[in-house]
Image (cartoon, rainbow, N blue to C red; front, side):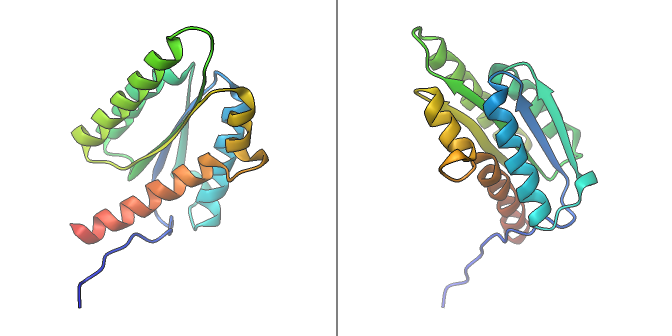
Length: 155
């Protein structure tokens, strides 16, 4: 029988850093509420989560990299909302955020829950922030928690 390792959604004792964009705050605040709810409802302690607010999604990776390099956090959760407009700006921001967070994961070997929405319109963003579908902030938090727990088993 194969040995199966799987992360558990248990946040007890974990130190989590959250980077959240202020731009499109009508969406990102709902994502943050979801992440906070997920952390507490899965055993995390309020004082074991640090939230850092940044101006926009483009600024998320530099703060995530700094937090990852500090060694203070078991995982990070990054939250933002990039909504397509009439110019290619959307594409550049989405690519920069994705690349930057991927680099932080590779460099610092820390799980990052990716909760940066990239949507075609405001309604899609609102749906993913909890008005209809599941809250992607909550989901990103659970991904980060599960990854910490599975990586501990693999090590």
